Length: 161
Image (cartoon, rainbow, N blue to C red; front, side, top):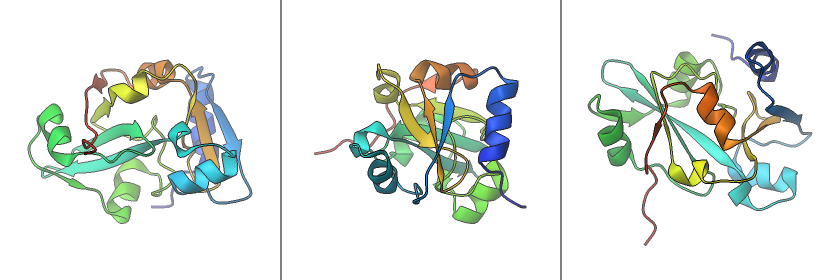
């Protein structure tokens, strides 16, 4: 499958009346660190969409702060669909249509979306995957929730000692 990209994501946003903005960069924004470097800001401004796969091939998207790590056990408990594994790059592309590093917090074909409360508590826009490694999506937490009907809000980040 050829990956979707920023163009397809932009079309999805437009079709759904989203005010979220796609931002293009000359450097790679494949990682939180790359995004922060290109934005000229702290990695805390970023969010990431982690993709997990159940044994019966259902997809779970966990949206966490950029500096956070997703806790698979917490995600399994909230999703309630059994054991999950972190999607390989090939699986992420197959199931979401987006390559790893560009997976947006919306339009990712997840069966279940879980948004960490730290993301929902943000009062300023966040920067997430923009469809490919040269784009970011500037989006509010409210818009993430609106664009993911039925999303669950739960603490799914690893506790930092």
